[in-house]
Amino acid sequence: MTEVEGVILSDIPKMKRIATLDFQRGLAIWMMVFLHSVQHFYDISWATNVDTLLQENVLVIIGVLLLALFSGFAGYFLLISAIVNSLAMTKRAARDFSPEKIMIKQVLTGLGILIAGAITEGLLYYGYLGNSIRGSITQGISAFRVTSFWNQFGRAFFTMETLQAIGWCMIINGLIHYFLMRKKGYQKQKRNVIIYAILAFIIIASSFFVWTGVDNYLVNGRGFSNWPNEVVARTYPSITTYILTILTGDLEPLFPFLAVSFVGSIIGLVLAQPKVPRKFPRYLGYSTLLFFVLGGIVLAIGEITKNPLIQFDFTWFRPNLSYFLILMGIWIGLIALLLRLVEFRGKGEEFATSKLGRYFRLWGIIALSVFSFQIFSMLPKWLFSFLVPENLLIDKLPKYNEGYVILLSLMIVAAYNLLIRLWSKVNFKFSFEWFILRVSSKGSGYSISERLNTKKILDETEWINFVTKEEAKTKIRKTTGD
Image (tube, rainbow, N blue to C red; front, top):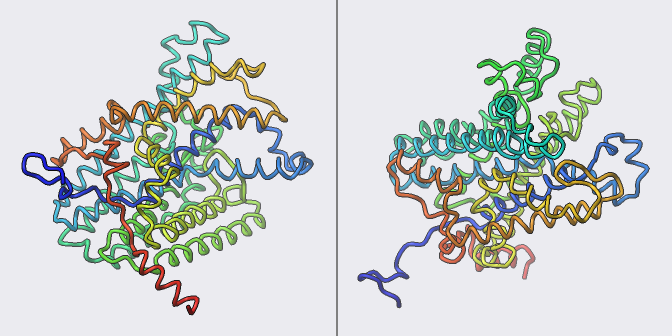
């Protein structure tokens, strides 16, 4: 037994985590890197014509449909984030932490993510530096002119990308959770779940009407050529445009994505309870079916009315409502499936310490910075350009180069994996997470979290199970009659 300064190390409480949530956070960011690489490398414009697409072989059709489907998975990352944050806030409240300090920490973290999002969109890959580097290939040094900086940095304020959605949802949920957790509100699980469910319903039910009202106001009332469109939004910069971008703009506006966060908060509230119902994955499965049914109904209405806001349509931009509801069902279904297979079978540690589990959990530790540092992908793109005639920094590969696209995208993933492994040696010092943890700690009075301590997260964590292996086996025997 190891002892340091009179303390037996095995007696020090370990960090407790849910393996499948850590795994899915890493999986979501891995998918983002791979899919963004495919989108950057591949000219998929030919597939937007359904008749042309249907003339291809089955594998190509399936590949295009999967790419279109997974391109909408940014909300999956938001859902996991909301679950983790709700779980953490509820657990802290149950340990008699001050609701005010919990709220302050959550709000400061949300603000930190908004700042990271502004830097990402306004300065890095899609902003001034990324566009200037790409522009310099044809324009030379003039691409870095100062006048261009303000035009490009405007994207930081007039787009609702994943980080902006997560940041705003964290702030809103932090405020709601504050009122719910006061006076031992963590004990009122049923009330809290009902409140979040009502809020989620309101957001989803009102999204179509909010979209219709704002779109008509900006296009017909203010003379905008199109909406939602971040380029158009930058052309008409104002406080009003900024607020309406948050509410209804591209790509993940609060209407309807705030509902994703509220659903995640419900899941987090339930998982934070001392005794989680054994049928909880089944209830999540019912929710999956509910969203599929709702998506199907809205889709049918959209096809009958030909309303573009609710017709089914794969898009990189603000998703149509039928598509959004179907995606919600898929995301919740994935959460339910993994919980059912792992934590509700007593396999948390086994799953977490597997090679696959460790691989994706390492990605999950630094997910925010990986998302933010998409500009890093420009280095391997430049290095790998010798493989094809095109310049991968600015050109896209045409049809029938799908094999090269997949290979190059996997090489980008490999480059990120190398960066993550090297960075983990210093516990991701100076990452966005590193700065945010310190700022939120100073503001709330909490000690700095050790969630960036790679050794602790990977090797010294207690993995939560909601059902032991013995209980799971007993249930299986009862079900099969053995």
